[in-house]
Length: 385
Image (cartoon, rainbow, N blue to C red; front, side, top):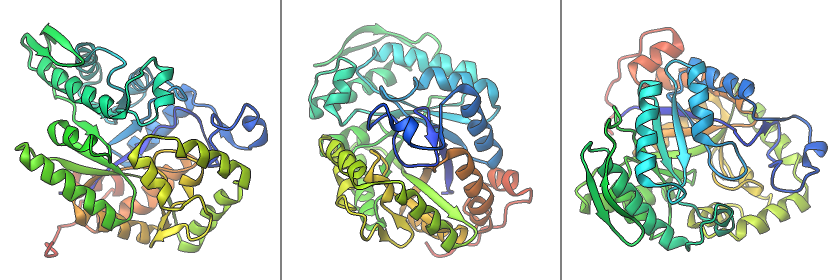
């Protein structure tokens, strides 16, 4: 099992700050320097950089605060050649048969560069903006049915399904996707686990300390075994990687200096209303306090003070960041979905600093290692794990 690296497309905007320009009022764009709009030219720069640096795919978010992921990424596919797109979408907001058809068309238009990130949704207020009024656990029930229909329709012959949320008669995608897109799926609640076990190709967790990540891996793996399935694992993290550890922590502290007490309090109050168990676990890592944000060596929880979702970053020298990636990899994590502020510059810091380090350790696939370093991949010697 090699390390597979992915980057992030900031379709809600980017910049040299952790402050979310959408979250705390209309004045944020005037008060904060270095904010960048997510126009196609800027996103294309990031996509091209990710492809050049050796990332396999880029994750695009979903929500009312960002651009539509399907439309944005199919446009960016015209600016890239190999890069895949991990398209986040919310089941229940469109027909599962239509979603299956959209995925099949996407695969043909991009020659097989689609991956799917299923986001059930942990915030009822956000779901209601889309007209969705189901509660948390019922949303996971619907996701279970949704993915059953999608996979059934991809078989290329009429498919019937009769459930609590969907009634499908003769559902069909006349030209199934080739290849069938991998499904990435996350969720830390008891309602989420069985859905992941039945449908996920890759279970994606946010960046908790290794011991907690191992608990999640063991949990999902055991549920999948009961279903007769094998699930692979991924992790979502930010990165601040520099030539020296001191430089990396200086950057982290500069990001922290942008955050005043009122901004942190407003963010924590908003995030605390989320129904997401994963979000609560992120909040528990720092408790809303600036103190002791390095919750594990080189794992920094400062991002989660003001931003929802992935709230931790790997901070350190290129070697130290590679050490942490290797540690997570040893637990069974294969996919690393990474990001940084700003996303263009941080892609280069990671790509030119950490990726060669991972290649030297034999952790990357041969084609990725040779493309990113310009040298043949090293021979990997077994290390007894």
